[in-house]
Structure formats: structure tokens, C-alpha cells
Image (cartoon, rainbow, N blue to C red; front, top):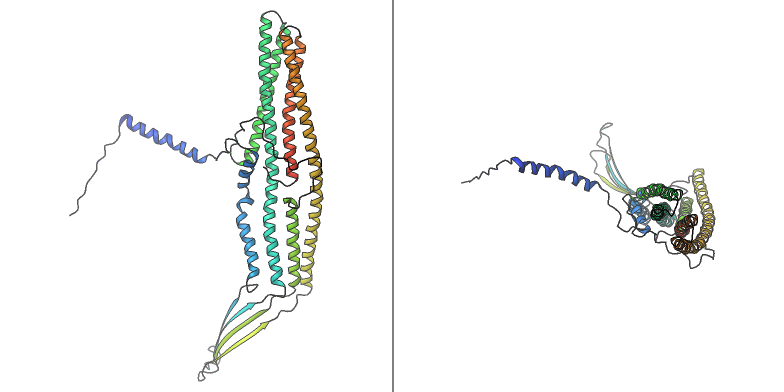
Length: 432
């Protein structure tokens, strides 16, 4: 016997129903918003972390594994027994449509392509070169992305430095204006001086608005590369990359492992191996065929069995093979020449970047000394102005000189770090 139990639910009425409905409708948009937001960068972003996240979004990074698999499969084909897959041959012959004497013939065979002399070894060399070229192409793409990320990063750091200096200038101008207003109320300063101090505040506010817009725009450029919101670093000054050499005075050579140079060299190597392979492929591959036949001449005869072993030797391709070989050699020569020109260009870029790094470092040291003297002068004049020993024009001029010195020092610090980063880029080093 089966027993059934029926459950009855009382409908929700009044305030409880409205509360449940509001919870369901209000929670859905929040869940959708959480799934739609892109993952943000860590709370303390730096240049290497931003580059790593930007690389994961690149098409080259997403297709890297498949390209490596394709290159490896091409290399493994040189280890096969035959250059091409074997072919199976099936034939059947009958005289049912013709004389109808009962003649029958059935043939089963297989055709095996054979390697040409030297073809297998050169195809293996071409596969090894293609594997190395795929890796070098990836490294070259990483270096190209590093240049864009570096430009966006240091552009944002320049904008953030200008914004910080504008904020400091506004705070200083407001403090100075408050002091002048107090003195003006006490009758110690004229109205023109009071208006001049207020004009300095307005000018600082305009500069702050301009630098804020530039900082936001530079941050959006970096976010477009990273694909996620980039919060500002906790410290105002970004950490510079390590120096690629103990001294910038000594000329730096072009590294042999430079990704841009290695990419051209590997492409030239692939073209050279391809030309060597084409040189031995002057004709089509020979074929070894083995077949078994079962036949009879008339219906009264018994079936006879036979085995056939044959070799197919194609003749040379002649002018067409020469054309392919000449085209492959021309391609190899062109790429080798491009690699040499790339080496010369990289050497010039390294020398130029090294000169800019030396100049930026010297400028930073000079600006640091200048800012130190300007701060000391501002302190002396501020005390003298408070004691009535310095006039208002001198106080204002010294304040402006000190603010300009701080801006120049902050910009020189960023430029020195950016020049060092550009030198690492010229040397083919990724962000670190």
C-alpha cells in the first residue's frame, strides 16, 4: 500500500512578501555587477606585476602552447619512418560487362614513400630551428609589450609626480594666503598683497585640476594594457629598476641573447635550413610498393596468387627545383642581412639610451642639490618674514623658487628612473 502526504503552504502576505521580493530583486543586480567586474591589480602594483598581467592578455601568450605543439609536431615528423603517410591500394577486375568468361582479379597493395638521401637529417635540423624560432618570437613579442608597458608606467609616474607637487603647492599657497590674510586684517599688509596671495591659491588650484586630469588619463592608458583597474602605489615615488651595469660610463655591447636580435637570427636560421632542405628535394620522393593479387582467367580455372614488389623513382624536377632553391637561398640571405642591420640599430640604441641615462642621473644629482638649497633658503626667509626682517615680494619669490625646485627634483627623479628603464629596454631586458 502506498501512502501519500500533501504539504500545504500558506502564501506570504503583507510586509513579509514585500521584503522577500525586494531582497530578490536587489540582490540580482549586485551579483551581476560582481561577475562583470574585471579582476583588479594588487593593492601595491609595480612594473613587473603589471607587465606579467598585461602579457597574459596578449594573443601571443594565449596561442603560445599551440604554436609550440605545432613546432614540436613538425620536428617529430622527421623521426617518422616515411616522409609521407603510407598509401593503401585496392583493385578488383572482372569481365562481367565484357566477355563474361568468369575472369576475376583482386589486388591489395601498400605504397611506402622513401626518404631522399640527406632529406631526413635536414628536415630534423629545420624542425629544431623552427622550435627555437617559436621561442624567440615569443620573447620578441614580450619585449615589444614591455616597451609599451614601460612607456605607460613612467608616463603615469610623471603625471602622479606632477599631481603630488601641485597638491603640495596648493597647500603651501593656502597656508601663505592664510598668513597674509591674518596680517591684512591686522593692518600689517596692503590689500594688493592680500589679493596677490589669493591669486596664488587660484593659480595652484588650476594647476591641480590640470595635473589631476593628466594623471587620470595616464592611468587609463595603463589600465587599457593591463585590462583591470590599477590603484596608485602607496608611495609617491615609484621603485626604479635595477641598473643593468655597475657603471654607465663603460660602453655596453649588444647581448647575443637580445630578443629582437635573436628573433631575426632564428628566422634567418630557419630560412637557411629550409634552403638546405630544398637543395636535396630536387625530385619527388621514391616509393616502395608491395601488393598481393588473386586471379583466374576463366570460370573453369583455379585462382592463382602472386606477390609484386616494385620501386617508383621519379625523375628530377629540373628548372622548377632550381627556382625553389634560388628563392629559398634569397630568403635566407635577406633575413641574415636584416639581422646584421638589426644588430647595428640595437648598438646605436644602446649607446643613445646609455647617454640619456648618464645625463638623467647627473641632472637628478644636480636637482637634488638645488632643491636642498632652495628649502634652506625658504626656511631662512620664512623666519625673517615672521620677524618682519623680509618683505612680501622676497617671501613670495623664494616660495615660488622652492616650489619650482621641488617640482624639478621630482621630475628629475622620475626621468632618471625612466632613463634607466629605457636602457634596460634597449638591452633587451624585461621589467624587473
